[in-house]
Length: 174
Ligand SMILES: [Ca+2]
Ligand SMILES: [Ca+2]
Ligand SMILES: [Ca+2]
Ligand SMILES: [Ca+2]
Image 1 (cartoon, rainbow, N blue to C red):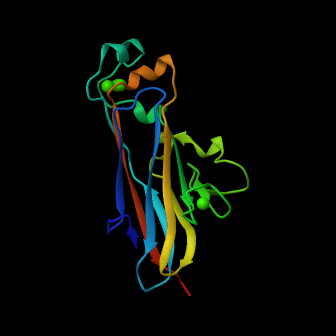
Image 2: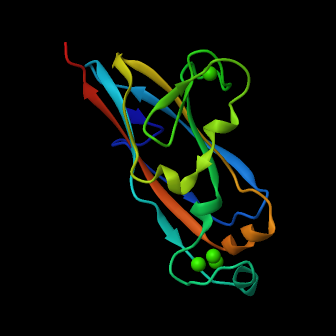
């Protein structure tokens, strides 16, 4: 099992220096490089939240505490598997719902429902999302994010958050 150039397979994802209206994406190629077939699991651990500086603008927007930032309460994130590594959302692809389920491609563009508030992914696991995987590509995992625009979003100025995503491949039971 290999994620990007990393082995073992925990990836740390940081969001920082985002302004209202910003969006972006990141992705990793995930591969089974072992000799045994496996079932693929994904989990997200606790999210680390940082206030950094609490600016006047943040206080004006309703940020009343120095303890922890608010970025993860506003940031909208979609996590999906580009199974055929085509670079596009198409047949066979799926996204990770924040309740531990996955939702398969049906038609059209990646749906709005694929986006959840970052905080709602805290401590969620997705089990057996792909099974009996042999040697080769599992897919490209894509994370797309978007910080909405709006007056109350100013409370996230200079805030940052980090979450760890862990990928495991369990030997398939025959
Ligand atoms: Ca705060
Ligand atoms: Ca695809
Ligand atoms: Ca803040
Ligand atoms: Ca701040």
